[in-house]
Image (cartoon, rainbow over all chains, first blue to last red; front, side, top):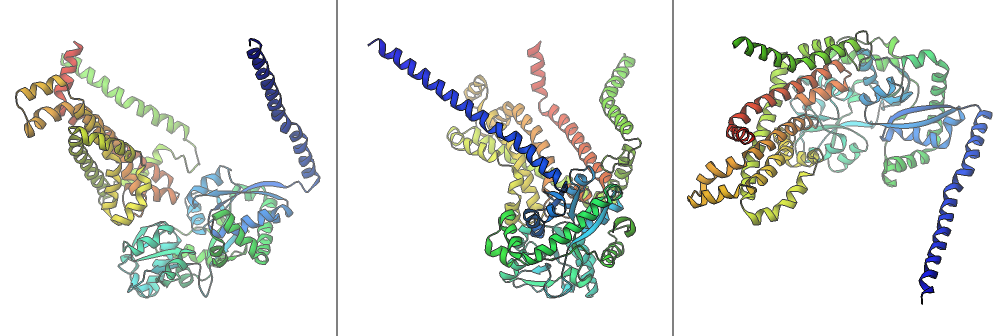
Length: 336
Length: 263
C-alpha cells in the first residue's frame, strides 16, 4: 500500500525527465543544421554573380502583378537582383521611404514624382512602368450610374464627381477633358471617395459620377452604369499611369544598378507578356482576387519605354490648370 | 501689494510660454541648415501658416466650417450624453439593460463606421457630424450615468423628505450632484471631438482643416502640413481654455467645497 504512491512519484519523475530530454532535443535539433545551411547558401551566392539586394516599393493594386510574378519566377535573379517587393499605401507615403532609403526604387504615379520634384524632393523617374491605352477601352474611366443624364464630358460641369485623391492626375485630366468638350471645369465639384466605395456612393446618389480604374469600371458598367469618358485617352492618349522612381543620389552614385534595374524590368515585362497565366495567378495570390475575376481583369500596357512628350504634356496641363505654379524641369526629373 | 501681483502674473506667464519657447528654439537650432523637406524650420512653418491659414478664403472655406462642425458635434454630444445619461442613470432597470451594450458600442472606433455612415447619411456635413458624435458622446454619456447613479444617499434622502421631485429635483439636486463627473466627461469628449473632426474630413471631402492637412501631405507641401497641425494644436489650447472658464462657473460650488474639506 505505501509503496504504490512512491512508485507513482518515481514514474512521474521518470516520465517528466524523458519529456524534458525530448523537448531539449527538439529545441537544439533545428538549430544545429541551420547554421551550416546559411553559410552554404552564402557561399553559393558569392560563387554566383553576387546578387544585389534591392527593395522595390509598390502599391497593392493589379498593376503590380507582373512585378510579383516576375520576382517569383526568378527573372530579377537572372539579372543579378535579389528583389523584395515592399507594399506601400500611396505615392505620398512612398516618398519618405524612398528618401530615407527604406526602399531603393518605388513604382508610383508620374504626377506624384513631378509634384515631389517641384517641392524640392530629390526624386527621379528612371523608367516607365505601365501606360494607359491610346485607343480602345482604357483602364480607367469616369463612369455614371444607371439612369444618369450624363452622356458626354461637358455634362460633368456643375456635377459632383468623385476621384480617389484631389489635386492629382485624375481631376486634372477630367477638368481638361470637360474643357475640351466645351464645358466649364471650374463648376465641377470634386470630392474624394476611395475607389472601392465609389460604386455604392454612385448608387446611393451621393455623387453624380466617379473616376475609377479597373476592375471597378467593369463592375459599375456591369451594374447598368455607363462610361462617360476615358480622361487619360481624351487628353493625353497613352499617358503613363505608373513609373519607376529612385532618388537622385541613387541615380548619381550607382548608375550601373539603375541600368540593371531598368533592364530587369524590361525583361520582366517581356516575360510577363508571354506568361499571362503566371501574372493572373499573382493577382489571385497577392490580392485575393477570385480566379475568374483575375482572368478577365483588363491590365494596362507594361513597358519601360518612357514617352517624354506625354510627361511633358502632363506637366504643361498641370501648369495650365493651376495645379503647378511653375513647370518642372524634365531634364531634372527624368533620368535616362 | 499690486507689485507682487504683477510679479506673480509675470512669473506664471513666463512658466506658461517658457517651454514652448524652448521647444521652438531647439527646433530652430536643429533645423538651422536643413534641406530635409520633411523637417522644415520653424520660420518656414510660420511662413506657411501665415500664407495658408490667414488667407480669408481658407478661413471661410476650410477653418470656420470645420470649427462649426466641431462645435455642433460636441454640443450635440454633450446634450445627448447628459439627457440620455440622466434617464439611464436614474432608472435602475434601464441601466442594467443598457450598460453592457453601451460599453460595447463605445469600444467601436468611429473611423471604421465612416464607410457605413457615408452610405446612410451621404457624404455631406451630416456624415461628418455623425462621426464626431459617434465618438465623443460616450465619455459624457457614461460619466453622466455614473454621476447620476452615485449620488450622495444622504442628499437623496433629504431632497426626498422635502418632497423635491420631478424637474425641480433634476435642476437643483440630481444634475448638480452629477456635474463634477459630467464635466470630466465633457473634457474628454472635447479632445475626442477635435480628433474626429479631422478624421471625418479625411473621407470623401473637398474642404476643411482635416482635408487640407492630408491634401498638403499628399502634395509634398510638408511645411504647410505642419502649419495645419500647428493650427489644430492652437484650436485645442483655445478649446481647453474655454472649457476651464466654463468648468469654473459650473463647478464653483464643488471646488469651493473641496477647498473647505481640505481645510
